Every structure is written in C-alpha cells, then in structure tokens.
Length: 176
Image 1: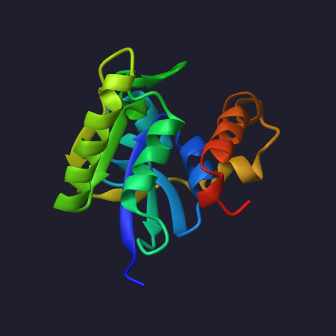
Image 2: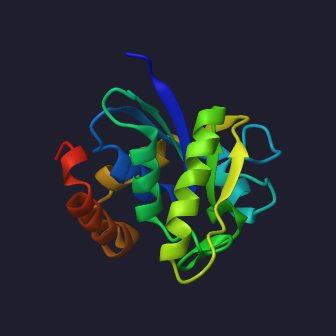
C-alpha cells in the first residue's frame, strides 16, 4: 500500500468526518484546521475568523481501494460548493469550501472535477483550490464527533440526513 493524503473543507467538519469514516480504503480521518496564519490554532480562534484557517478533514487513503477522484465526488456531494464562506447557517471563512491539494495530480484532478461539476449547478463553484501547507488537528472532542454524539441537535437535524443521502449514493464504496 502506498497511502496518500487528501484535505477537504466543506463547512462544519463533523459531517465530512462522519461520512469519510465509512469509506472503504480510507484508513485514517482527522478533523482539524488548515489554510491560515496562526500556529496551533484553537477552535475558539477558528470561530473568530481571524486565524484564516478553514475547518477541514484530513484523510489517509489507499489509492488502490479508493481513487482520489471518487473522494472528490464524495466531497462535493457532502456540501454546497456554490456558497462562499458558508454552509447553510454556518457563516464565516472557516466554513469555506476548499481542497488543499498534496500533489500536482490532486490539483489537476480537483480542477477537472470542478469543471465537470460546474455546468450542472445553478450558481458558480466557489471552492478554493490551494496547495496544502500545514494541518493542525482539532481538539479531541471534535474527532469522530457524530459517532460520539448522534443525538446532539446539530447531528440529528443536519448531519444524519446528509449521511443517509451519502450512504445511498455511494453504497458501493462504503463499509456500513
């Protein structure tokens, strides 16, 4: 196995984290922060919007089991890439849609995916495509948040329906 890393930001990281934990070939999932200028940011700093970081999920995956292009398709299905600096009621640059690429191949595949997706949407894709620089893991209570808090209001109202749709659309790639 030659593991690779992918880093995606699509609003609140709890939903993205929960979905990718079920994907066959994804061996590690971590919620965290990337793309900002503050070293070792805290969740409180992220929430101010002043650190420049986005809430992201960093995946380690086996490309022999799941292709980066499939992960991109999943990522774009989990959030609205046409909303600038927000996802629903979550507003701020920390909730921006972003792919932090780890190689030129990932950058090219991301752009190709956006180019294919864009004509199917009613508004322009605003997803940022940036080189990955540094990932800071979020606080422990954010890791695998949905599994640990399924009855929490946000989880049951916002995340559970997205996960159900995700499971239906990508059933062939999931370990349920």
